[in-house]
Image (cartoon, rainbow, N blue to C red):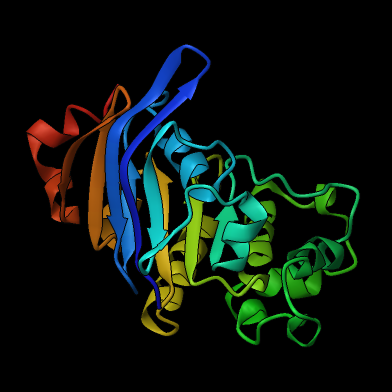
Length: 233
C-alpha cells in the first residue's frame, strides 16, 4: 500500500542528540522491525516518523510525499497509524469510545469499525461497554492496536507491542500483524526487544545502538553473534 522512508534523521532533546543520521525504510506490504537495547533511540525514531518530535535534520517520506514539517494529525491523515509504548488508552472511556477516538481524522462516511477488527481481536467486541482501565494489559494493547486500525492506516507503526504482555496475547498480536501484511497489504514498522517475535514476523530488521543504525538486513541475521551482542544486556 505504501512505502515509508526516514532518511538521515537527526533528533535532539535540547542539547542532547538522540538520533544521528538514522535512515530506515519500511517497504510496502512488509513488516520491518527496529531492535536495540533500552535507551538507544528506537522510540525517538518513531516520534520523528509520527511527528510527535520534529527532527532537526533529515526527512520522512511516504510514497515520495515529504512529511517532515507536518504535525501528527496531518501524518495520520496521510496514512500513519500509531500504537505508542505504554498503550495510552483512555482508562475512563469505554472500549467503544476508545475505538471511536480513531474517527477524528476520518470523513463522516468512513466512521465505522473495520470489518476485520473484531475477527482479529474478538475480546474487544465482548467488552465494548467496559471501561478501558478495567482491561488487562494485554487487552489494552489489543485496544490500542484496534484504535490505530480504525484510522484505516496504510502504515502501522508500533512501539514495543509485546512489552509486559502475556504469551498468549503476544501470539494473537503476531497473527494480527501477519494478517494485516498478508491479507490487507498494510506496511508495518515496529520497535521491539523481543527477538523471537521479530525473527518469526519481520521481513527486514534494523539494529540500533547509541542513536545510530548499526545493521540492516533480514530477520535471520538475529541469529548472528555479532548482531546479538548489540541486543542483549
